[in-house]
Amino acid sequence: MPMSNYLRNKLLDHANGKAAFTMPTTVYLAALTSASSVSGPGTEVSTTSTGYARQAITSTMSAASAGSSSNSGTVTFGPATAAWGTITDFAVFDAATAGNMLWFGTLAASKTIASADKFEFAAGQFSQSLS
Image (cartoon, rainbow, N blue to C red; front, top):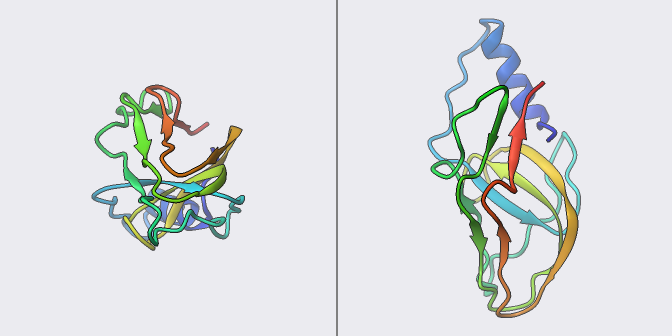
């Protein structure tokens, strides 16, 4: 999963003794309807009267082992109170709204969310790794 330029710079400065990187208290998974790049996130689902909100994942992510971490429980968005469009991508942020994008990626299969639908990552389906 690619890292944002923000996270790359923070980790490099931290590892090279330039500036300490204060870890986020909570990290949040976001659903996107367009792709992100290293310089910024794609289009996030609207939070205005849709039932959508970023989901906190700090407590469900496993401690890293062999350079990898994954969700130990289901991460659920919704149910939607209005159509969200087609979810194609995701991103991890350091805040419930706004904040800095840390990681991003594209779903293996996109999912169109209509009113009353949910969007979920089953346990073990969301993972991060460094190589």
